[in-house]
Image 1 (cartoon, one colour):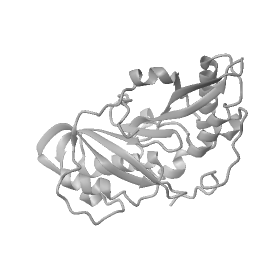
Image 2 (cartoon, one colour):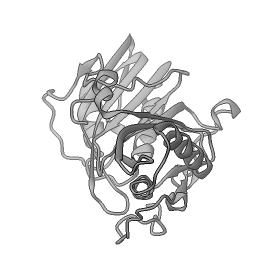
Image 3 (cartoon, one colour):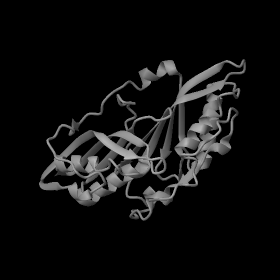
Image 4 (tube, helix red, strand yellow):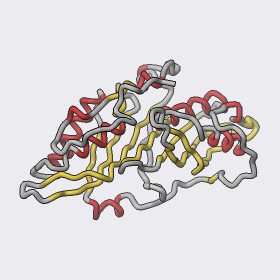
Length: 278
């Protein structure tokens, strides 16, 4: 397992009450990816394209009159960025705005975009929304597709096993399947991370029973959200060889923050819907 003892995860931390960009702690993506197969410069040497969409529900600052303002923020990181931001440091950074005055929400948004882009080594997108507007912009929804959770399968494996993945080359399909049964665990604190996983692909039909066993096999696996989704992508590509593949993990929020990695063979944006458990 990758050593993350240099991060603030699992450690007592004092919360800053004044703005401090120095709280952001970047973790190089290469540290967790190891030896991912090189696929060319267009994708940063990776076998996929994609983004990580983070949603923050606990953003506040003071206006010039000292009145607290609140917002919901969406932060979009390209998967080619040099680093991810360690999630606890991200929460501490957001909380550091709480007692600092800013002229407007646009000023807060611009400052966050500059700070986080500098920390992760790539241009990220930041969009802040008024709380009263957010449900109209991101209503609770479900992605089209077929849920495989009620299949009659026996499960006895709770560490990832790609041998469960099989495809029938005699049946070619274009479909989306999903499961709400993905559970992974923080590699530092071992806290559970719950997610729904959406798999869209074209090619030989993937055996649904084997796919469900594979998804559940992550139940005691420890890694960050991004690396778990990338492992699922790489395993399905290797075992089932689809002509197109997109993997989308919608993780439940913890500490007012959800992290939703999207990896794909096609240059297409992820659907930023809000899943019912989020």
